[in-house]
Image (cartoon, rainbow, N blue to C red):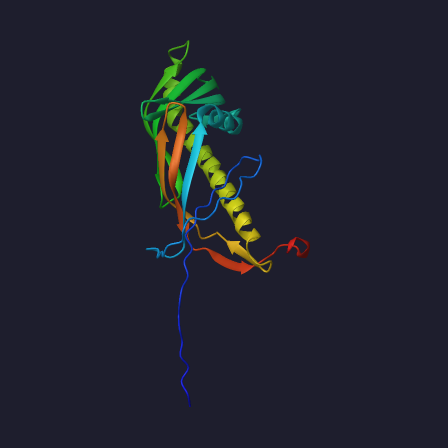
Length: 227
């Protein structure tokens, strides 16, 4: 009996993918540079993540999520009517307008960070100031400042997850266009492995990486959409 020779090989592809929210005209194709041998140090897909968020847009989005929300603590209630973000040096200022048991402006100084294990954004509180006509209400605000920071942190996490999911969906759709109709990309294994949040004068600069396995599976696209 003869023997069967086997040859095992692998192919890696390195490319730069860009996903933009701009719905304007498409960018003209750019010729590829000269191809060179490449071997990654880790298996799977690794993407650079970069976001630039200006304070007015983030403030408006968070205000819409939190406006009218009432927090209760020890028989007292305060309602968040608005939120404004700004910078103080390298720290973030979260200014919440409150009504109810403590009417005034509560400013929380925080330092943003990211927990890769929990895949969550965190706001480390550094201090707070309560500005109100009635100074006695400052004691009440002191009860709520941590709760308010936690709520802002929670909604900021939800916004970050939605933004990253939107980028992944857009990338998946773009990759699907280049695949045979019976195949579809599966990006569910991707995770944020690193995230740096820079507090700038005009907004937040988020940079990091998303990595994980890129799998191919059967396509669920309707037959009419298959090429």
